[in-house]
Length: 286
Image 1: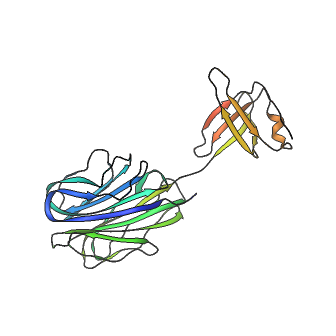
Image 2 (image 1 turned 90 degrees about the vertical axis):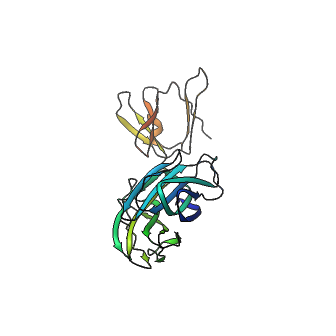
């Protein structure tokens, strides 16, 4: 297993009050990439992302609001998208392109306060302890800057609209195999209303399969623990064929008979993918 990777990151800002906001997307987007956009704006008007983007979370607090959306790329994306707000506001955004992931992102319940230390909350993702990519983020009112990022986090980035009516966002990421994560606080250059959160990205999980021998009534007899290879084929109008290469001295071979069943079980979720009723058995040795 390996950690998801931040393949590219970009951002930008709009330091002029407007209802139309150009959001930059990372370069070299390929079908299947995970795209993650964090969009921050003044006040708390409504907003609209383009079709095809899914909301991960949104939160408003006094004069700042954040909307985080994601998309599984199909390869037709351009260099930007347009996000609109219900009233004219300034904005800032940070955009990620992530590879080597599975599933969809998960986020904690946002932290909100007024201080110079935005603190991302603890997150316990549903997949448990795996090679997870964690992203800590904070957003805030006015044109402050991020001066300190959470300990052990890298890729520090700070996008902000440099105006007294502006907003800003700070992000950093960490690779850590853990069942939960509680990032240290950010520090910004002045006390402001802030919103902070933690996002987790699941790795590609390789659980594999297990072959089991069962009686016809479903009782487990044995498990085939030492197969060299497993090949399953199905031709038109022909029975399913399962070819297994195993050590000749494996005792479980004696259980593979016409009267028993072979079950193929997915170890990720425990489901039985296929049941085979042997019609004949051919042993090849040497």
